[in-house]
Length: 522
Image (tube, rainbow, N blue to C red; front, top):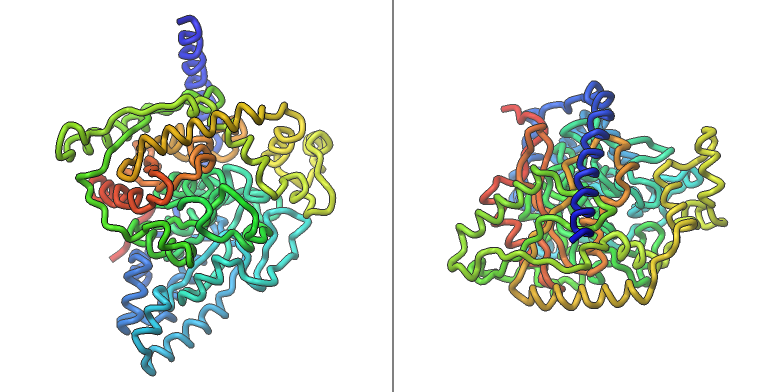
């Protein structure tokens, strides 16, 4: 009883502290807010889904050159505010588009299009995902001139599907932070509020996609790096079941390493996620059941209102209300009372960060070594005083992560593995083949720049499902009173990715989905 009271008192204190932090940082960042340009009539095609654009190109209603040119022009309009693009291949992309248009004009068999479902559609990807000839710095100064020698496997598969790479986008150092900021390219800004974060590590992709600057945004996720930008930028996303997308060429990976990471996409259109994921899953795509028919009347819904991890900020009232609205709507739509959403909880949610931290030690890429470009090892205790003197090559976020790995006590391996097994067994058993879990995305909507330094564990609401290796979709639910996107996660059992997407589409229909950060001019 006494411990429960202390925990509630602690969370009340955290709420007050978060409000104070938001107030202080808001005094500065609210005055720096810049709106992004409205979408011009000639760029209106960029509102359409990637699937629709590919169909229009195939039917000769639109040329690839027109689409790529519109994408380039839109990037040039919004990037001065967003600071999302780190390198581009505009001229090469236009040349490739013209070559595609010429082939289509001359006539192509149906089989050619079937093998290239996104023929002529431009795409962008995070800069850590290698594109041959383009910058591949991973956000660190020692790699400032490094260019990729080969395409990452996911990029190769996208090219094979007919898509055209146009640009690469900003990431935090080695993809390991909640905000896209580094000492090489600076900070990426949110299109809904330039004084707020886009999230990490695919925040550059989230910014461009939400701003109508790219039809396809290729991302990756090891602790929310796809879903976090989707949430902060009002987009849909799918982090597919781990182990079914190749990581080769992503942050210097060989693709042979076991990992809880996966390749995925953010999109304004939920309908794009299944066909895009099928492309990067390659031969593994059938195992994900992406296109399986889902009878919504047979789904069993479970939900969690908030997690009890003491390291993480408590869920804000507006996001609790968002969850309540979803639960109420699904209860209303339920074919019977036994299909109404039911509460679920496991003690594993009390240790989300600790579990993620432990399983990160099993990943083959080591952050201190990668910060040194694999030429030694960066020491947090050395970099901290250098940072205070303005002499470090790394951000404070990177140094805090170094200190967490090198100074703080390690998580007990036996405890972590036992709890993870119990947690995984319980949630997979509960969800089965027809269940989904509705889960909060984060404690609050997109925070002001730099405030996450004071809330370093909040990403755990996403990271816990990387630990469990479950598919998770991020679903937008409109905007809050400050004009910032809000949403929830939809989680399913292993290889039940289609369930996540089916519920995401249902919520898109009921709540409207993506809401633009600018006007669409007629």
